[in-house]
Image (cartoon, rainbow, N blue to C red; front, side):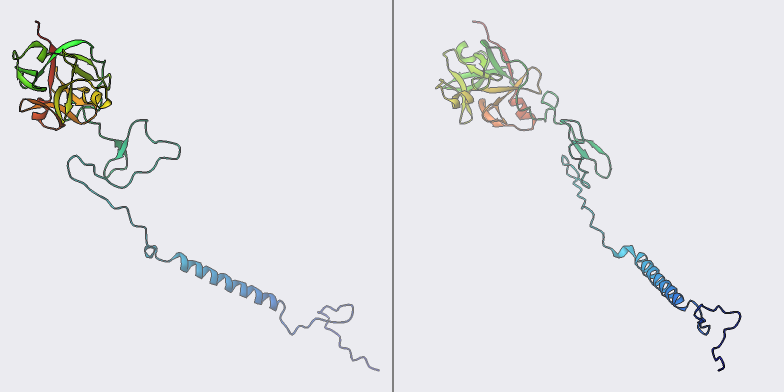
Length: 276
């Protein structure tokens, strides 16, 4: 019986079982399809990335910048953008020194210095409390006005007036300077008969000590330097910001005013008591 099994050409491999590969199909077709699909996916991904990265950044809304306030009134600060906060645990400045940002600049500058005392500037308000040693206890003094040097404190009719020097008895124009009844760093004025000068209804009067805390406060006045050489301003201890001043030749407790007349009316010199 003739053998009908076809023989492979001599240039094709023959497996042991006699099977030969089919040469009618191009080799590696499946791998070519996979490679082509991967290439297409890569191209699509690159195109998408380019589209996203190429979007216009101006379309993204930016947060609004801090508003800028310019204040041109004298005595007020002008504010610019807020200053940066210092890191946690650090003050960002020396102790006791405040700093503020100068308008339109990126560096900080020291805050304006506080107002000077009246001895340096006639328009500045005196400090809250006097400085220096306590007043000399037991010294007898007369009190004269700076802008009326020929007039002095004079007790008459229970109140204190500004009368010409030489009028009245010595006991009515001299006062024993003692440590403040409510604050030993301040002054109280005792009279020859054991009374004290105290304000009542904002008028300076002579009154007997009743032992109350109110009386001690009413009779205590804290000295501050005056713009006038050798003079002091006397502030009420229980009405801070009010100073003794003469008005219509009577002694009143008036609120501090930043003008030359008030500073002159509230300036007094404590002089040695006249002999006799």
